[in-house]
Structure formats: C-alpha cells, structure tokens
Image 1 (cartoon, rainbow, N blue to C red):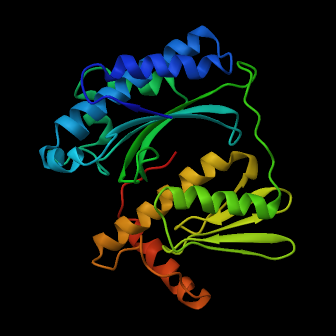
Image 2 (cartoon, helix red, strand yellow):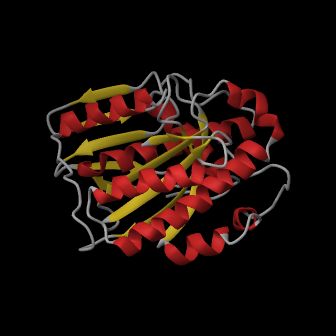
Length: 281
C-alpha cells in the first residue's frame, strides 16, 4: 500500500512503487509492464474524474491526507492472482453525466477501458474505505487483476486457526473505521457481525463463509484474509448506500441486529440492493 500524489506525477510514482512491490514476488517483466500500464490508466482516472472532474470534492479532499491510494496484494481464490486497486474519495462514478456507463467514463481520457479489459483478466470498481492516513474515509476503488499461477513466487499466506482468523478480520475491519463489531467464538467456529447486518463465519477447515445481499453463499480460505476484508468493507458500504437510497438510517453506525431482526433486514436489503450498480472484485 502507498499514498499517491495528487498532481501529474501520480502515474509515474504509482508505476515506480508497483514495480518495487512486484519485484518481491519475482513477477516476470512483461506482466510488471502490463501492471504499470493499467496503474497509469486507473490513477489518471482518479486524478481526472474523482479529484479534478468532481468540483464538489474540492473542499472535502483538502481534509483527506491521502486522496489517492494504491493497493496491491496476492490472493489465492478464485485462482492465484495479483490484484491492483486505486482508491479515490468519490464513491460513485463521475456525477457530471448521470447514467453514463463506467466504461465510457474511463474511456474519456483515452484508451482506459480498452487497456484494462485487454491486459487484465477482470476489472471493475466498488465502494470501499481508505486504508492509509489517520482516519478512514469512504470512496471507491478501481481494480484489476491478473492470474499469476507459476509466473511468480507468491508470498506466504498463513492459515490462521479459526478463532484467530476471526479476531484478525475484526481488527482489520475496525481499522477501516467500522465500529460496533461483534466477534463471538464457540468450539468449532467463530462469527464476525457488522452493524450493517453482514455476518462472516470462520469455520473448519480454515474458511470464511458469508452470504451476500442476494442470498448467495461464499467460501474463501482464511489465508485470503486481505481479500475477505476488502469484500466485507465493500458489502458494508453497499448496504449503507442502499439505506441512504431508500431514506433509511445509516447502516455504518446501526447497532447490531438480533437474529430475528437480521432476517427481516436481510430480505429488505436484498430487494433494494438490486437497484444499485453492480460493482465487485
């Protein structure tokens, strides 16, 4: 992770920092170059649309220590991949053109969307919170990923015990500014419950399990702790956006639900989240 400047030097700084990070896993030069090109496009998008194009952010970004951040990490599922994310403090696509497709907006400053789609196995955006600075702020991340099976020396992913994995997840979520988190343990599993109603179970044989707002169950190894944290923050922010869209209370600070209330709440959220733009990594 590293902060990026908010001027024309940002793309070159991103490429330099990214090259140093990828050197640690001995990624081949061709993929390092591809990641550098994709980072340039994503950072330029953040500069032009989130910081420069959205005039309403001028005052708010003055109080944000690092308006642009670059995150890069290795994950094991759905296949070994390196994921690159560029954070900016605008949690939607540029509001100047309502209804504009995100791909068209990336293409406004050149080859953006074509480059991301051609060089990556997948790309997109999602709501999230910053990871650097003294206080987390809401925003979005533009992301892309490339499979790296047998193409690098992947970092070690420790397989944490069930209870330790849950506590580590709780701590990472708290560091992103999510409070009122419940973390409980029994003999065979642990749960981490967020104030938005999202519950993530840590279970044998070393997996996290959760249901998304559509009711689909997801499993991911506890070794992918960073990626599970990113998913949990994304779902939490989407639930908050759904609550705001429908005039409800703030899902970021709502007290944790009782099981019966959570069932009703989850059904309500599944319906209203269908009106949000699809955004996932």
